[in-house]
Length: 495
Length: 95
Image 1 (cartoon, one colour):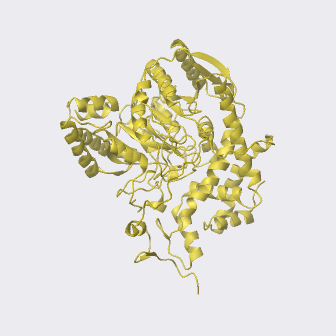
Image 2 (cartoon, helix red, strand yellow):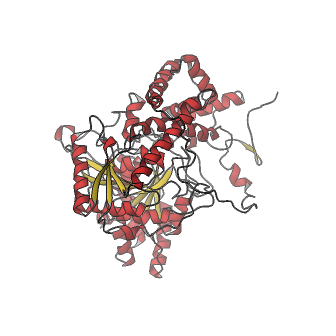
Image 3 (tube, helix red, strand yellow):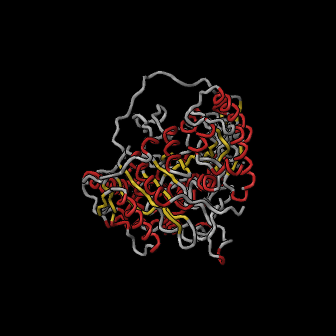
């Protein structure tokens, strides 16, 4: 029974709970025990069994009364970037290792309002800065996936990042779905590397209030889930206008689930020629062509499009994101919350606190950000990068103005890589993982990654669909077509 | 535009991050790798292009100008490393 409960989709579990096939407490217990058995993956940085069972009991009471809320009794994991009231929230940084918020983030509050159950807090790259989940102070997350080739099958792989704990937990059946945040690909890249679905909604769709800030003009929350329908269900609850986030958008949240299974006939799908990068792996190229074929078979029209400034998105990102991070992370001064290093005077306190509290990648990005914003360099770097951003957004505007409904592209340049493969060398090698996802954040658009096949080594590969602002529904309809054609993928259990 | 050791020390000071002397050379290499990577933006002609200020064109909502929160000093100082009553305590600033 427990194994069955943790392999259901969120939609299946919802129906079973409403049909009283099992209780929310049983569902929570099955997940708590799966989490215990999977600790080697290091997906959770904090398990909250008492909270989970209390929430599940409340859900069972509602179900018994026949008054279920949209997510009643559904067991979720929460990325440790979301502030959860009275539950330690660290951003996986030493800086916040003892931080216990006295408030709840809007996105998680929305999930609890709709009846969801919290299983615990999920691992991520420190302050969400990374693409492999190796920069967490709690140590790396191990992907539940392994290569199938005998020789290499024991090599631990990364789940991607920064939402690596979320991705690993969803793929391994340690929750029915999870929250993530995406600044340059942090939901979509790990979703692709673990064979699950992840969507970064339009900037402003989900409130950023109560999410540990990284780069405020790029950060968005979104769900990771085992199928397209589950992602649609979760996004509906997470999204919405919030007075506490001045950039959240006052627009009704549609019933995303209703878009799942809708016909895509006569939709125009753009294939950006600039995404055909030099040295692209043949298996990625094949997957992409396969994706076009599937959409065409379902009645969509495939057209080549041009997004000429694509190659400048990643370098512009590595100016804008560190610049905003350096401002946002200035708040960690050892005074109001977080770590304080012992020091002889106040300057020493600031400097020692920040040297001890931040890990290497975070320090690096703060320093780059400080440099590009410093006197004499602001125009050459930050202002120029913001102008490039306008050009990137204009590329998409032009394509959409030509009647294209969505753009189809690869999600990542390769399948999952081994632990320490990219984290020990040049930082830029790691940054290149986000080459296909980062344009979407720069333009504020919605992007969904959906699993589309396996690599030659037996690892999941994903495709990405990029939509017009606030047209997430189109993405759910298109992604469902790919999911139906490709099937779903789960790792062989070895833990 | 590559940085030298002196610039690394200056940036570290501006960022209020203590950097040990033996870390400077390594950091210089890493920062220069990133700066070399972003250098390709100079290829682009951005004359006359407006810098992006907001990805989604929206008008900023204004709320009524009244106090909606407050009176929670215990919660405010709850995570502070050092407090005295409801005050944050820091090392002596003025001699």
